[in-house]
Image (cartoon, rainbow over all chains, first blue to last red):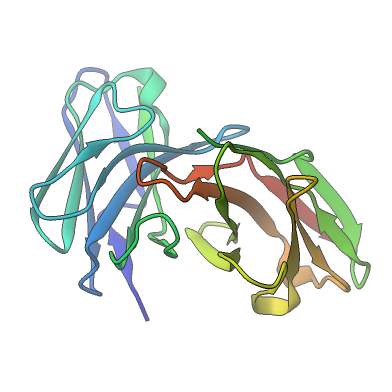
Length: 115
Length: 114
């Protein structure tokens, strides 16, 4: 079974703090994704990566950056957390032969509260 | 670009009743379509997907969906629901073109009454 793990289930941070969300997958997947999930808005893509050190912006990259130094690990960074970044963050991965039609495998999510 | 609309934010049904969760999409190119399910306090997992071929797609846990190109719909159905089907369901679409990203709908919360 594919396993996608996220470093924290719940996080509480203060406005202006730098926040790191970590995601690790154990199936040698090429593609990794970060989404945020908000009630009534579904999932919105923040960034994705199709290879080590490669990244592409999703639909809402502002205020975020990412890092992929190793194939299995994809980090989401909030450079200066703000209250409007309070949300559920979901990481996902997929195999890599064709991004568009592939199944994505999701982690359990990190619920971030910015005070 | 693609977009997807889930017409119902919440659907309450009684146990053992049939259910249909509606999904409509728009796209200027051919599409791939997905249904994902999110059980309480978990990430999403794939229920089923349509890539090509038969328009009736069967998924896990007794769910099925029908791709209707003329109506641009991909409704999810189950003939008899169980308490364990309580979850949020997301429809998603992506286009054939290399520039397409997957777009998720806003979700439908299915609640099952005993």
